Image (cartoon, rainbow, N blue to C red):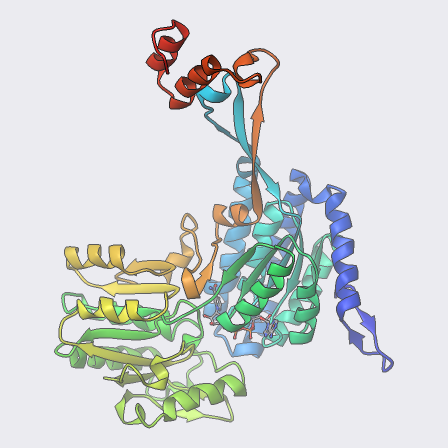
Length: 493
Ligand code: NAD
């Protein structure tokens, strides 16, 4: 889909001129004001909801083909999330679109003021492969709700979902204002050369820098949804079974660790680590059986490049002797079993980059408080988790650990709370979306002041005199007594 041309062999091509034409077409559509109306936004959101409702099985099949994603995860973590976002936007849209009345100050008296949410214009959404349905459509929902035209570029690493999105969006949505461009680096680079009004990019920080550099050329704002090494700090004062289950659900139960908010590594005390490892092993076996490589409840590694990357982390001689559970691989099926590594050195390969897969290293410390220094010595993660019953420790964690989001006594679930913003900080990204935050992320907050022709004060106009300055000083200080004083001639200012 999109404004594509053909080469001499008849293959579809999408280069700079096609990207430029597409941007022009969508800009013209935006300028025509059609995407601004409540009715248009509503109809597009309703149609997006239909995509998720009527094509559930096709979506599940595409995700199975791209990632062997279990149906359960496809439904709970992708399809239902998209549906919920659509439903919320449909329910709240009128309310979100309403200008927000705000107070004015004495300085502008008499006046009224409001904040008007205005669509940016044409949005470029570049999405990632790990949750290819959700991460493509969730930002699109926000962009449409805010009244923008949108171009979506799904990830080529999840080709079945990318193709399905192009087909369904072409069938269900208004293609004069919403388009899908399929493709990889060449196509994305062609799109990035164009002027957009906001770019939403989900993926790794290396490409995030490429996106931001391209955006800078046109002074285009960016929403960067990146990743990082999300730590889990585990205290000994916990319900061990509930904690291990929740760690497993966030790690291997989220696309086999290929999720931006999956626990990346654990920090616990030397004394408690053996207990925690035993509990994790026990629960892992009860969830995925004795042969996890055969389990239908675990996604596979997305492709051979990522498999090779993870294999390298696994084979690093500094950690290969530290594997206390798992470590099995099946290269032909691109499967790696849930793997736990105990006491890994902090300067090992597995600790130097985001793992994004089924390996879980555990770092041990003498005192749990040391975990704060370990976390803050790295870049700011997308999520940070603490399992503890200690009130002081929880307070300290929330106060001192800088991360996109924090969850106490669970993992990943903050993503499902639509009243919370979802986004990173520092190296894990900038900007946030979800729920009303999605609407805000794709709206310019326009400041509007209304005045009438009454109450025109000569004091603001030249010729500037000492008397006028005294009145203005009193006005700007906001002190009513001061103003009265000046008006009555009591004050010399
Ligand atoms: P990816 O390989 O699918 O890349 C993301 C997008 O960038 C794709 O659409 C791709 O075509 C495009 N791209 C790749 N190279 C490019 C280049 N050189 N120039 C222009 N565009 C290019 O996904 P990925 O980066 O492997 O995704 C995994 C990363 O994304 C992890 O770091 C993960 O934590 C992060 N992530 C973050 C979130 C979030 O919501 N914060 C969600 C999912 C993944």
